Every structure is written in C-alpha cells, then in structure tokens.
Length: 222
Image (tube, rainbow, N blue to C red; front, side, top):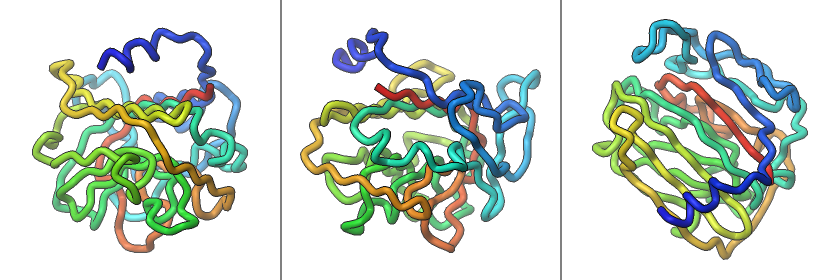
C-alpha cells in the first residue's frame, strides 16, 4: 500500500473526467462530450440528499466520450481512475460490468489493455486492465463485495505498473489490492471496440449490465 500512497501525493495528474452522476451525466471538466443515460436516477441509499445512477436493465449505458477523443492510445499506461459502486444483487446479468473499455476482456489479440470490472458468472470479480494475463487483473470473490454497500474501485496504470485498490467506504477498510509490473502492452484504436462505457460491457449482446448504482466517476491523465 505504501507505493500507492506515494503515487497519490504527485500533483502531475490532470483530471479529465469528473462525473458525480448526481442526477446528471455531465462531465464537469468540460474536456470530453458524453452521451447516453443510466436506467434511472435513484436516491443515494446512504445519502438521500443526492441521486445516483442506477443500471438495472439491459442496454442503457453512459459513454463518457461520445466523440471518441479519449481512446486507448491516449490513456493507456498513463491514467488513473476511481468509481464508487453499490451492487444491487448478484442474481441479474450474465457477467455484470461496472465499467469497460477493454474489448472482449482483452482475451482477443486485438483486445487491447483498457479498463475492466466484470463479475464473471456473477461469482468472481475481475478488476484491472485486461482478463487475458495474470499480471493485468485482480480476482476478487463476490463474498468480499457484498450487496447494499458502497465500494470504491481505484485503478492506476502508469509507467508499466498497475495499482488496484478496492475500499469498503462504510468502514474505510481495503478489501483487496494488487500492485504489479505490466509486461504486455497492447492498445486498440477502434471506437466500436474500446470506447469507455459505464454500467455495461463493450462487446457482447447478452446481458452484462452492472446491476449496480454508480457515482463519482473520475479519470486522470498523466
């Protein structure tokens, strides 16, 4: 954890996406144009004074970059991001995804290294930049991420090193983390395959909606 704490002290990061997701998909930085909508807006279960984005039906997503200016070649190996999520249930969705920009989970040779968070078969979470390699993902049992609680997913991929931290926001405890060097680097520029997407997966037609509430999505570039 020491390495990540040291990284967070650096001031040379530019916040390019700041989406509180409080009854609006507006990116407050103004750098990139977003489009789409969540399934609905609901009261934050921990703070009724604000709204959060609810993704509980197949299809509705938010594209933080509708114009596709923020493609993998722009942010790969020089980004950090965080997003808060509240899992509604583990009974819906084939492979629920909180956020995705990694075509086919990176399994295909053209998949690229993007941003990933998939609960495979509603059982094991894969967080990281690809499902394809051991060093590019953190596997977490759903038992460590119970429903009806806020968690924060922090991911940094910079200078061939990946940091992942999952925090229980109710207790402040870290429930899982990984800090590792990345040896395989591939990026993809195809807009239909690796556009940043919230609340769903980027590729498959089956139901990979997150079935979660999302809030406070932020992304920085180095």
